[in-house]
Every structure is written in C-alpha cells, then in structure tokens.
Length: 98
Image (cartoon, rainbow, N blue to C red):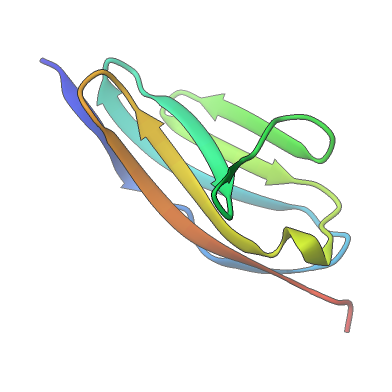
C-alpha cells in the first residue's frame, strides 16, 4: 500500500573544522518513493559548487565540501510524496581552525 515518507535514520549533528568536508545523511522510506530535498536556514540547497547530493537506495546524503564558517546553521532534510511529507532538522557547526 501507499505510505507517507518516514525517517528510518535522521541526520546527526556535526561539529567540523573549516576546510573539511561534512556529510549529512538520512534514510527515508515511503511509497511512492519520496522526493527528497535539503534546506539551510529555510533556503533550498542546490547541488553544485561545494554541495553534492547523492542517493543510494533509501539513503540520501548531502555532502558539503571545503567548509566555511558561513556553512554553520540548521539544515533540514525534507521528504515528500503524494501521501504526505516528513522532515528532519540537524545543526552543523563549523569551527575556525584551532
């Protein structure tokens, strides 16, 4: 039968140093297969430049390359299908090099 998207695993909060990469990942199931998008501070995150979006089965990843202080903030993974939507929020904190 059909089911609204639901998170099997949610992204975990991260603290990372400037210049490193961070990968936020979550596992989402739903029928029909949900469309998954990422937002930062309520703005959509578009793939390209330093942002990589990947999907591997029901695992969805957002990788941010070469982190800058401005990448700190709240990221939201949002999953939608015809039945409903679900989202998970996660904090990313980028620290200056020690």
